[in-house]
Every structure is written in structure tokens, then in C-alpha cells.
Image (cartoon, rainbow, N blue to C red; front, top):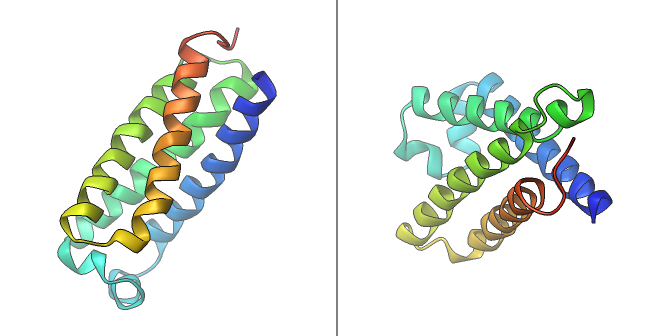
Length: 124
């Protein structure tokens, strides 16, 4: 189970980090032209989301990898679960049901990592 938690945390951390870097580095106009949802948010909101994804993604693996405050791994997973719950809520509000599945998978993965690392398989 420990290996499964590492794999899930690592894979989804990569997704969050890449998404965060894109939101932080792409010009807002270019990003909003590729996707429709950013037009409903200010450039500052999108940058904030990018920072949250980048920091949350790093928090899923780096504390456990370097054994520096490993309790931050489930804290990061909990924070990213809340972030993804917001994304799911926004998808439902906008009736974007085709895109909803990906957000639900990310949400479930973060709940799994938070449960595992807070509960039966903590990092020591």
C-alpha cells in the first residue's frame, strides 16, 4: 500500500506541477484562447490557481522524499482535495460534464493519499 500511495502521489503531483507551471507561465490571453473556463476568471485568479497547483503538487512528494516535515504530504493532499472539490463544483455549475471525470479522478486520488498518509500508512 505504501508503494501505491507513492505512485499515486507522484503521478498526480506531476499533473498538478505541470498544470501549475502552465498557468503561471503562459500569457493569460493565450491560455484563455485554448480553454474556455479561464475567461470567467481574472488573470490574477488563474495565476493564483497555478501557484496553488504548483505548491500543492510539490507538497505531495518533496516532504516525504527528503524526510523533512513528512506530515506535509497528507496536508498537501487534503488541500488539493479541497481545491479539486472546488473544480468539481465549478464543472457542475457550468454543466461541463464531459470534463468532470478528470476532476473527480484527481479528487479521489487526493482523498486516497490524505487517508493513507494521515491514517494507516504515515511517512516516518
